Image (cartoon, rainbow, N blue to C red; front, side, top):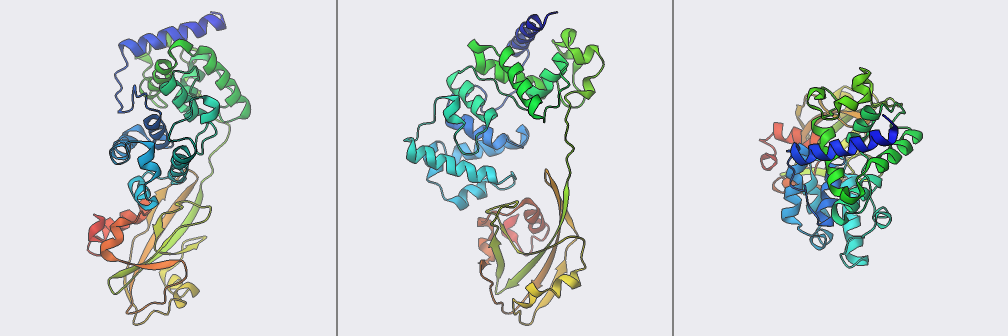
Length: 361
């Protein structure tokens, strides 16, 4: 079968599957409001649909339109985002909502090119909004699309290479149904999520199987190809959970690092596992001028896996009659701790020590 014919057959079979057999349900499916489409796409970046759905529903309920989100307090939005990770998405989301509200009269841009200029919006998200909200002929290219196209057409060019991204983008545009771009884009993403899955794809149920190069060549498990190996960095975090007069020493994370704008306890980071006695003897502890300090507990090491790094966190709980609060930190009352947004690993610790943080449960 010639390449052009193969492409047409792909589109025909995919659209037929979408019409007759695609039963995947999501609250934003079929949505035409660009705000809700944008919100769902930002939430789903690096997040599974199963997890993102509940967050989407909560955000829409609290912030039903761009004006409501743009005028929200940062702390409230970050608290609602808490647990989703990749908090830079939330920061960009707030910046974009305020830009649209103040500079564009709360009206979303109507073209792919103008959508692409929004902070936190890349080619995939811009194409999704353009096609779903405005029926523009822009093809989405995400992990599901890479996988489906690579297997069906037998493309072995690494998807994470410059050449691969260009090749797959061109191929995606070629097989797009321009008259039904929203339906087509939804179809190929759903197909990749439910049939042409990364592991254990349902080839026996696949309507494209007869023409799939990967299946015919018995190389389904080899495609798509990725060129770069993910190297994960290991980091050891030692948190000093210091309580004094029913208040805890807390700070907001700043700088260009993970968990920006979230709160945490006093942190001492080391390059390797370190004994708690050595942590307690550190300069940072001495500068606090603790008075009648008592060691309450040293937690087991908790672990959180991020995309490019693994965090090993140990929590050292202390009580002191008084404390010299360092610049950039504050003492937060116990019953106000629930109002702050913390990284998932700190929330896990507070849940395990609920007698000290009853509001965190």
